[in-house]
Image (tube, rainbow, N blue to C red; front, side):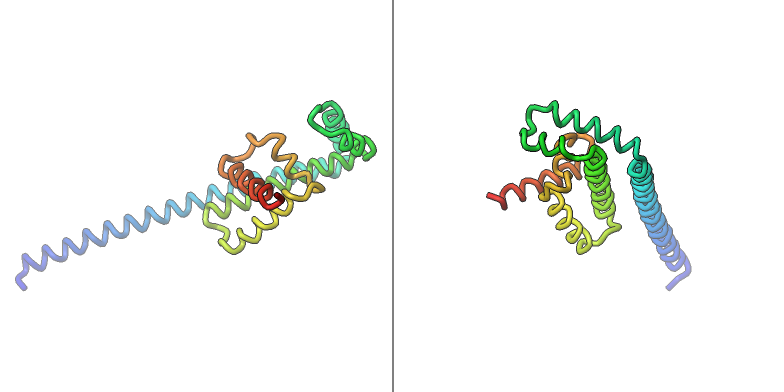
Length: 175
């Protein structure tokens, strides 16, 4: 092979190598950005959990939340009288504990779903978590379904769709 042809081939190979390395760097940057976003989401979730843990440890905080919650339950026309009577016979701290616990659980599952969507949680792990989420939504003692249905718009759209799908499945399976 003559020298000009060899030189042309080496330049082509060099350009291909540069393009391939730039593509690799781009993929690394995308992955780093995805990891950073997932870490930020996890940090916000942890911060929220810490805030709620502080509330759970505060007797005055639990009384305020529980008292407000009881007043809300008593004032709503869509809540059956049997539920109102039950709530009226519970310590307000227990009502607050149930409400805060439901919100924390929903936020934790939202974080797990985000991690799954970002590729940081395996399909197998998410499937197991989804079973637990469905069971928790179906169990009235967790208050998770009511907490979600009270303010569905506060959740990420994809998570809201997931929960609505799970609730739809549970409604179908109970019929």
